[in-house]
Amino acid sequence: MRATHRARTLLIAAAIAAGACTLTACREDATDAGSGGSATAASAEGASAGQGNSADDDSAADDSAADEDAAGDDAPAGVDKGVNGAFAGGTVEYLAPEKYIVSVDGKEQQFYVSSGTGVYGAGTLCGEYSTRATTRCSLKDLRDAAKSGSVAADVVVKGGVATRITERPAPDEGPAVDDQ
Image (cartoon, rainbow, N blue to C red; front, side, top):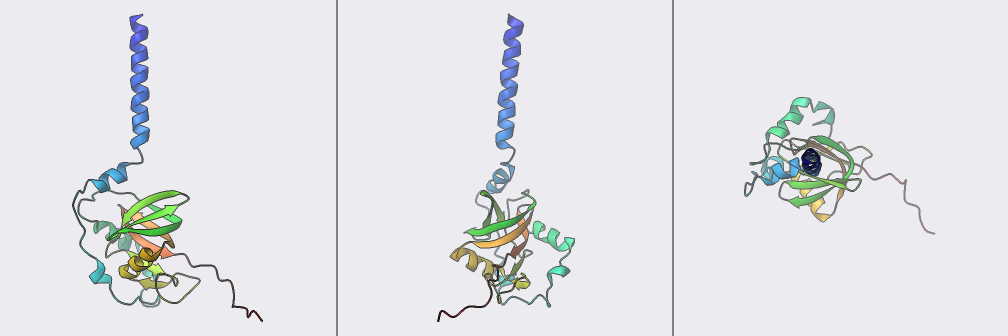
């Protein structure tokens, strides 16, 4: 009888431990980002202010893996770990200075931006409408567009910091037709 009670107790303890692990498995990034307390990030706005550059001046093809690593090194104070991943087909919304959220298929992920974040627009963020997001935008352009509404974009995040945000252009519906 005592052996049965011990086995049942061990089984219940194992089930509780497994349940706790599954509940916290996806929460590591939120816990790490929140552990910064009152830590704030230095403003990257000054380094990125101004007009966007055309793709010919700063082509997306020129970005290398070393450039993507650079944004992860610029993590705001208190953020030593973070989520890594590519979030394609999402919408980006403004949360707070240098902090945004990307929503993909009903799931949301918060991320930071830094002076190393590459932002490319296709007309909504900055520049003229294009079927390709080739215009280099500033972080101020991103902030202004995201504050006024969500922006359809693909986001690449490393260590909780976006390394690249690429606007998804609206579909071209052809020339306007007169209603006469």
